[in-house]
Length: 66
Image (cartoon, rainbow, N blue to C red; front, side):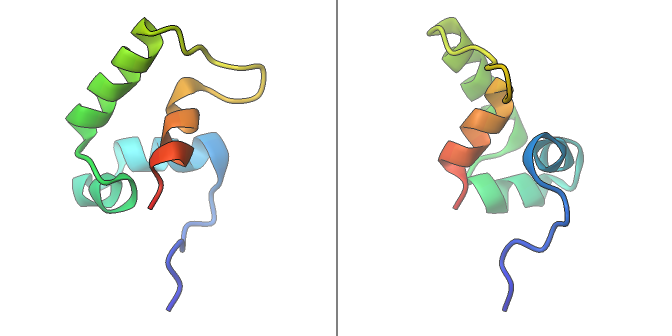
C-alpha cells in the first residue's frame, strides 16, 4: 500500500500538512500542528534560516518525516 499519496512535493506538501486535517500532520511528522509551530520557532531562534531553495518549515518536515 502506498504511504505518501499526495501529488504535491516540497513547500506545497508542507503547506498541505499545515492547513489540512490535523491528524494528517501528526501522522506524517509525528507531532501536532501547535508543536510543529513551536519547533519551527525554536529552530529559527537557534539560527536556522530559510535557504535559497527551501524554507525552514520544509527543512524541518524533511527531518521529521516518518
